[in-house]
Image (tube, rainbow, N blue to C red; front, side, top):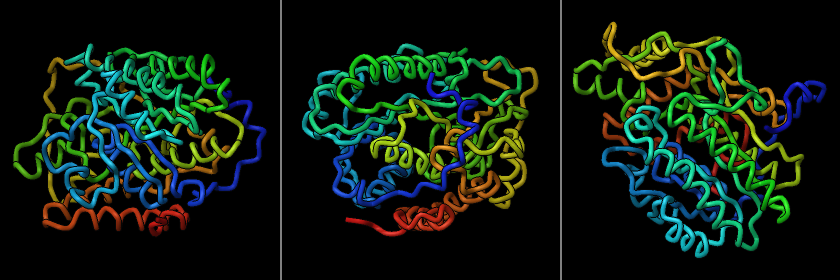
Length: 379
């Protein structure tokens, strides 16, 4: 699916695209999944660009996740809605009349996919179908970005970096649901939205870390809970390799990608956002770096011989297309991303103002990315 990266090797790499506040200021943006970890950060970024954001999501999970910590400072107009309810979702879409859509709502955990495959497929597959159906009748719609996962590729553990034209697949229910979402987004684009002149594109990101994530069965939140409780977490796959990156890196890429697409750039149906392959970091190495950032020793145990769910041992995706088309690359090295995450959790432990601290991290990221559009609000 999409433009073959090998065909793009002859292209001259694009200079780094910048965010254009004029392209976002005052735009009606529908953001699904705004109560989640990535969604809460995306809401802050969109608000800085001056967008009028309607968030559609289930209620946030209990606990000190970023969305809950933002409280009244949250700039997103929140509409609680289960995207598996087609009628309810259509009403929200009709009322918000979005010009731009960033679809991030999903059941996002491999482990939960095993525990509840039907619910996972309902959220990830049918939820996306319901959204695209509702959007077909919206006048003034200019572009749709559907966020999937780096796990959409058929991974035969060959140690390859998956480019956008690699075969889709999925061993487990979560991965399969995201691959199915890719296929359905492509079908809706070609069958319906192309004739309306509305681009529908998909983004695939590597493993994302950052402050404000409290999900179970994710490495850094689990390690933080071990640090707080003094009870070590059982590490499932210490030798597994993942494309680790700070949450702000792919979110910035998503914004660049949608802006470029809507501005009339060559439509690229799908795009990967991930760090360079080298240096690779295993689960164990990331855990060691995170523990060191907290001034802690070993926060985990490894249960040898325990029966485990299937997970890929090596996963890496090729982001050369994003570099060539957008000039995008990660602004934070892996160890820096882990360090920033540890700083966020330590500020939370010290009872800091987490809305202000998160905004400070966005300021620091904007300077790293050399993009002034993110340095101050544009309202």
